[in-house]
Image (cartoon, rainbow over all chains, first blue to last red; front, top):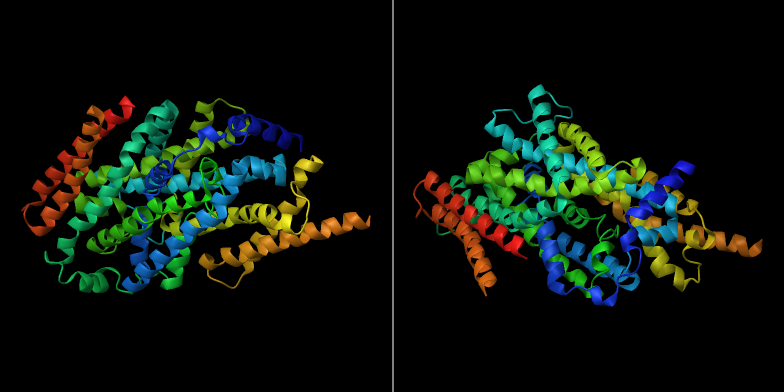
Length: 456
Length: 57
């Protein structure tokens, strides 16, 4: 416990600058949020996700309806779940959760987030490796591969991971400025790549057979061998939970605490519709043009040549770079090492993870698990913020009683995950009953706790 | 004023990238190497102008 107390104290120091609620003169206009969302949601993952929809045998109608509906639900989750709590508290999730769960449990949450983030960064490195590997004639792992099968793939992913890590160590600020320049161009890479792939797919210049080609050659409803068939609800739920940790999981409170009004959550549509709809559609077109092979580098190269390869590498790097920064920040509190050292170690570990094809080839499942693991914390904060005042339940137990760990929160978090594990549902659908279960069980346990105290 | 002009030119480079893909699909840019060249030139234009614009802020 003293070790955890030390970690919590160091984490408090790192996040000290945003401990106080945001001052009204620092609030941002709507265009700020539109720009942030538009830049953040066109990433290397989009090359893989849209392509996987094709490989999972999605039909055109299911895809269009699923993405429109699922992304709308995501936008509404930001607007009605995340933004109102952020605007009312003007705090980050870190500091709000600290009042509810205690500094010890908040540190555990941050470390869990760091580990999950580093695996995601590893997948991004693997995406970039498919582009570099194409130039160096290094074969990309197969869809069913779990472990690396060649030394050359391990060496390649490790080298790219080290390069990304060195760039992250060299200077986050200047590089993040350059990354902001990359984002609009990466969206252009998706759109142009899809347009340039229309000829090889046989789409006539007058678009007369576009729908026919889309139905029969791209989203034809037939899954690739070994891939599970996806239908409408898989798409609705995937689009909804793709950023579950950010909206329902409330980590985007860090952004929306600067919003003038909770309705600024609607600006998330600037990320969802160009990124999670258009880019996914475009990568689907590109993967169909190369014969349904999961190879982001080849997809972009066949469509756009060298610029396509550069696009894949930059997309991987712009996603991995801030991720490595966040991982470094979380781990710095544990080790107490200087930033360069902790980023180096986190980067090397991430580079090793990147060589395992399972994280890249099972990206859809990983995204689901990532959101699922952090979701109960969002549910607990939601219950505490909205439900507790109506039931006259005492709020901020950890802060009021000076607890390191609120054991009720930990019990609900772990219990919800165990319940989700045993749910007889597809992985994509488990988070929603899990979320409701977490809200109900946390409220009930807190109510029972109060009754026990009042009887004592 | 100069900054607006800079960003307008940079934006035109992005439009040029997409336009080159459309022209290639429509057959007005006849060969793939020509398309890749046009796309590459517009890309270069975007990165030079936009990087310049961002560092001026």
